Image 1 (cartoon, rainbow, N blue to C red):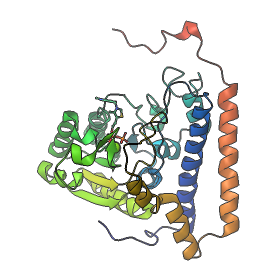
Image 2: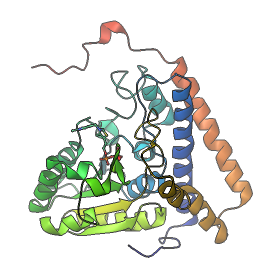
Image 3: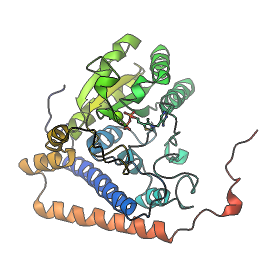
Amino acid sequence: MQASVITADLSRDDLLTLLYWMRLTRVFDERVHLLYNQGRIPGAAFSQRGHEATTVGSSFALGPDDLVAPVHRDLGVYLLRGITPRRVMAQMLGRATGPSRGRDVNLHGMGDLSLNIIGYPSPLPDTLPLAVGAALAFQYRGEPRVAMTYFGDGSASEGGCHEALNLAAVWRAPVVFICENNQYAYSTPLSKQMAVDNIADRAAGYGFPGVVVDGNDVLAVVEAARAAVDRARRGDGPTLIECKTMRMLGHAFHDDASYVPRELLAEWEARDPLRRYEMRLREHGLVSDEELAALARRVTAEVDDAVDYAEASPWPAPESVTEGVYAP
Ligand SMILES: Cc1ncc(C[n+]2csc(CCOP(=O)(O)OP(=O)(O)O)c2C)c(N)n1
Ligand SMILES: [Mg+2]
């Protein structure tokens, strides 16, 4: 594990920007949970609680022209990379104004190529080969761009994951793989699906660096991600960053996660990424209680606005059902 860092050489503005995205992600997620419990969300919804530092810290390291290919628990990535809270909430509520135009719900299918965000295809880990393909295109066209993609510990055991990692190495593709090791794949704990301690150790077998990072420490994630992005942009090829974190709720909101030991959850709760970061900023005099209160008000207002917008948005028109369908 990398040592904890104080500021990752970031300006105060950047430090507060990270806090903003983490808090927005948390509050947005809590609101989705509430809406789900009220029966206002069609289908399932996946909580990202616990992933804030991993998603925000990694995607913060990218430049404006870089590309992301996130998955179902990466709310922080979609928000930070430019899909507005309004559009994400419309997607959650299945409305025509969401990125999938009501074709899909929760974060499935949520992308926007104009923002360099590849929509999440449901079969795991198909996001990885897509990101490697995008990185190959950047390399082929001589563009100094990087692709960053995300996958869970469960997805790390799928064949497509190894194929993508291997080809990325062979092609020295400008891609950064973020593994979100949150200890569980649905109800399957790590110990039931792999016999190694670190997924990052596998990178050596493909021929590129693998780094283990505390996924609940946003500044450690930013540092590791920046190094990997720089390396990819220099033409030195991929990096695998394994962010150790915890899925703090069930697989989706319908799942009470009764199979997860309470002691394990308590252990990770003590390392809550948002609270920990706020405490660190306060200890270093980088944020005041008034600023924290103002931030909380600001993100709550943004989420309120997103819900109002989504609920006032139309459902997809039945006659539009064949639009966007690819059939040769
Ligand atoms: C090929 C495939 N099998 C099963 C699923 C259903 N599924 C969606 S998420 C998930 C768990 C994935 O676990 P992990 O990769 O650890 O990600 P996490 O949900 O923990 O973030 C499963 C089984 C799927 N989307 N694709
Ligand atoms: Mg997992």
